[in-house]
Each structure stands twice: as structure tokens, then as C-alpha cells.
Length: 207
Image 1 (cartoon, rainbow, N blue to C red):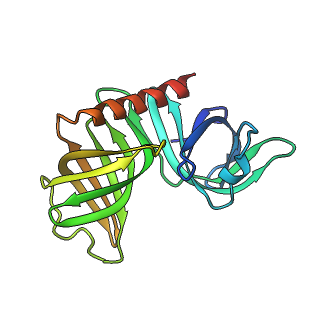
Image 2 (tube, rainbow, N blue to C red):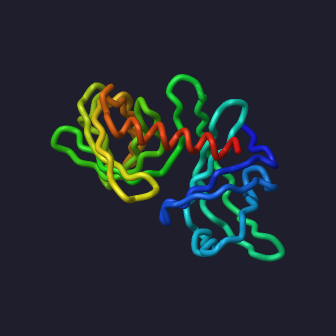
């Protein structure tokens, strides 16, 4: 999937817990992208070389998301952000349960095992949880259908939200593990928060 020049993009700064809108104005395929950002207070700190940011844009009725590292940020002659060309794009159809990419710090417990990682995409029905381990067979003993519970923080970092569900998928590559989780039907405030977050993302990207 190509990233069209001129696309409106929502940029999230996980370390700072905020986001802003920008425009993809250029780049070189498989090398870099250029994003025009508003020149606001604190933009230099948010766009330091090496910072990992999350980007989302709309494409043919889908939210497409990716994470990328900052190459360089320029103030003059224009406020321009150079980022690494994404190696992977995550496309999520805006049908049924809306799903968007994100970067939420999270804790997950499966049986007696606890994992610290990041939720990399989420919907009101489930999420993808990613963690890294120094153990080569980091996913050993995990099976679909196992009960899981955990908590995560949204960008505001004002509170953590518990969730309960089951493992739906397990993908492991050495010490890198991605777990697909299906939430239980009754999640109370979690369902409200997730739906609100996704609706806000859609609104901002369409504005």
C-alpha cells in the first residue's frame, strides 16, 4: 500500500502523551517520508532524532497506522519532520468493530506469568499486545483460549484501565511475541474509553 502525498496524518507522541495533525508532503519510497507539522511550543523535544512516533491516516474507508523513527526535524524554512519509511502498514477497516493502531503501555497476566509490553492496536472487541523477552521461546506454554487479564494507560496517562479476555492468537519470533486478545463482552468503562478514543481518532483524521 502506497502512502499518498498530501494525506492528512495524525501524529502521536507516546513519551509526551499527546498528538497533533500534520500533512505528508513528500518522501522517497523505502527511504523516508516528510511530514509538515505546526510550529508549536515543545515541537523540538517531541521530534528529537530517534524518537519513535505513531502515525495514522485515512485511506479508502480504512485507518492505516504505522510507527516510525525520527530522522531529523527542521524548523526553517518550514516545520518539517523527516521519518524513516515504514516497513509495515497496519490497515483496519472501519466496519463492525473499529480498530486503530496505537502505542499504549500495558501489563498482561496469563496464569501465573506476567508480561510488560505495549498494546499496538485496539478495538472495542480486542487488542494486539506486543512484548519482548530475553528468553528465546518466550511464548512457550501460551495457547489460544487461555484466560488473560491486564491493564493499560491511554495517552492522557491519568488512569489505568483493566481488561479481561482470552488469548486469540500467538505469534512468536525468537524473543519477540505478539498476542491477539479477545475481550470479554462486559468490560464496563473500558468499552466506553476505547470507543471514545477510536471515535476521536476517526474525527480528527476526517476533519
